[in-house]
Length: 240
Image 1 (cartoon, rainbow, N blue to C red):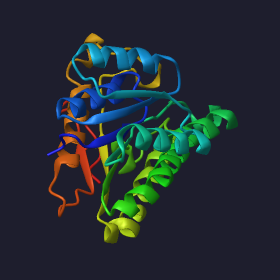
Image 2 (cartoon, rainbow, N blue to C red):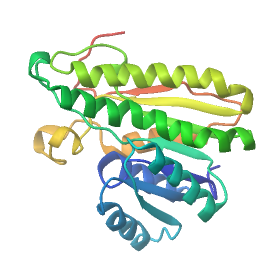
Image 3 (tube, rainbow, N blue to C red):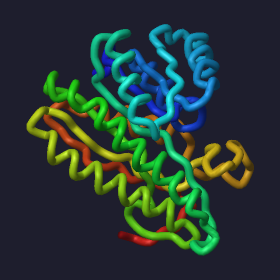
């Protein structure tokens, strides 16, 4: 279903984004993988050693419009088109609201919301022209309810959910599908944590999120999956 399709994955240097790239490559996709540091080239080398030859690493800042326009341009120059965009890049921190600095507030919104907006904006003209495409954003279960000590992060994920829903309505007439993946607790590097800690053994794994992306992207063209919400059994959460 995804063989020979072309994808862009942001935040692909490690963690969830890297695993999304692996799973999509396993499906036979050709990928542009995006990261904010030179580590993205190391990730590309790792993927190529696994036998995935069609990997284009691009170092770019998702908060900058020119960078993301260049990402789309380079991907089309290399592979001819873009079928799937995965907005995965994200940051987060968790503290009392009065302890959050304005710089921190701006940073989390710039990456989590502005980055999704700019990447989506950059790819939409191409997808509209082709009358085909899938845009998947990695949001969070906190796009459905609130948590303490996470006001900034929670606000960004509500924003991503609302943005995605509005865009989905704008572009459905062009055959473009827009949806979100909303995970609960995931064993990853998020919020300066360490992946693989013993206390995270029953959390979701990065491959669980990547498999959800593959499922959403692989749906028949006539099917729109608005969102996928998934949690580890050990996580208790309010019912929306």
